[in-house]
Length: 562
Image (cartoon, rainbow, N blue to C red):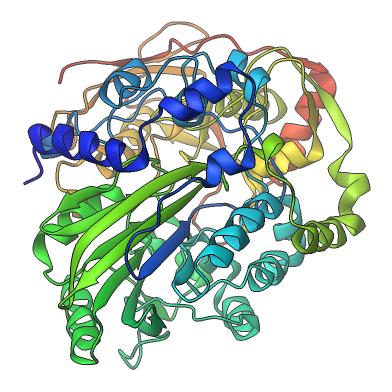
C-alpha cells in the first residue's frame, strides 16, 4: 500500500526532476512566464508519453476552478488526490501566489484568475504537443483519456463530430471513452469510423455474443521500444448514464480482462505497457495494486490533477486534470524491458502565454462559425464566482438548482454531481455558451414530480455510497448530487444507509417527513421517456429574468464525523 511517507519521498524526488516550482514562481513575479518556461524539460530515455483527459469538448480557453473539497475515505484518506487548498500547497511546497497555486487549487482563485488568465484551448495544446514532437520526433506518443466528445454547445449540435475533427487534426495516437457513449450505439459507431487513430475500450462487450465491441490494445514503436497500450473505458457507464443509449453493450472494471490484455501485450513483445484508463484515480490505484505488468496508468474520469507521478506496485499513475487545463509529459528510460528511469511534468496550459497553433485555431474557428451568434448571446451577468467542481454544491450548481425551483415551481431541486463545467469569475457576462458548458447532455429533460421524504433520503444515501464507499471498485463516479431547497448532514465515514441525517426543508426549516410527498424538480434522469423542458432553457430563462446573478456561500450541507 502507498503510504504517506512514500508520497513525501516521491514528491520530493519528482520535484527535483522537474526542477521544482521555483522557476515558474520567479518568472511569474517578474511577469515573465513564457511558452518556453512551460515547455522547459530535460528529456530522458527513449519514450515520451503526452496525455490529456476529460477536456469535455472545450475547444477554446476557459476559467476552471479546482475543488475545495476532494474527500478520500478508507485507506486513501488524506492521500493525493484527496487533498485540496492550503493543504495541497503545503504538501507540494507551492507558493500561494504562484501560477501553480492558480492552476492546481481553489485558493484565492478570483484574484489569481485575473492575474494569470484563462487556461486550455485546443490550439494552445496543439502548440505544446507539436513543440514536444519536434524535440522528440521519433519518441513521442499523444493520448486522449476520454470525455472528449461531450460538454459544449458545438459538441451537442454536431453530436461529437466537432471533437472528432479536432482530435484527428491533433494527430492523436489513441483514445478511450466515457461520455462518448451517451450519444448512443449507432452514433458512437459512426464517430469511431471517422477516427484516424485507435478507439480502445477492452472492457466493453456485446451482451448477446459476449464478444469485445472495440479493440483492447494497440501497439506503437517509439525510440526502438515496442509500446503496448491497453484501453479501459469508464466501467460504470450504464449506471451513471442511461442504459437505453447503449442497450447491447456491457461494461465493468473486468480486472481479469485487463490482466489478460496486459499479458497479451507482453506476449506480443511490448517492452512498455500503458493502461489508457477512464476508471478514476482510486480505482486505478487499486487496479495497479492487483494487476502486475502495467508500467504506466494514464488515469482519467475523476478530473484530478497531480504535479507528481505516484507509484503503486511498480506502476506509475499519471493524473492530468480536465478541460484542457494541463498536458502531462512523461519521459521513460527502458532497460531490459523495464522502466529504469523517468521524468515527469504536469504542464499548465496558460492560454495567454502560448501562441495558438494556426492549423488548429483555423479549424476551431471553422467549427464555431455557424454557431457563433448563438454562442455569444448574453443572458445576464454574474457578481459571484460561478463554478461546479467539488464533492458538494458549487455556485453554478446552486444557480441551476435555483432555476429549477423557481422556473419549475418546486420545493426541492436535484442536480447531478457532474464534474465537468467551466467557471466564470465575477463581472463576466453569462452567455448561452456558458450555460451549455454546464448542461449539454443528450438527456436534458427537466422533470417535475413528487418524492416522499423516505425516497429522497434513499437517493442521497445511494449517491453518497457511490462517492464514499471505502472500496474504490464500488465508487461509480461523479460527486454528490446537488440540492436546492434542502439542507442535510453527511457523514462520509459511515456505512450505506447511515450517512445522511438532519434533512430539512429550507423554506420552513421543518424536518423532512419520510411519509410526506414533496414537489421535486431535477434533470439528467437516466430513465427513458422522462419529460420536461431542456435544462438549458430552464437555466437560460432564469438568468434572463434575473439579469444579475449573485450566489451566496452554500451553508446548507454539513460534513460530520470522520
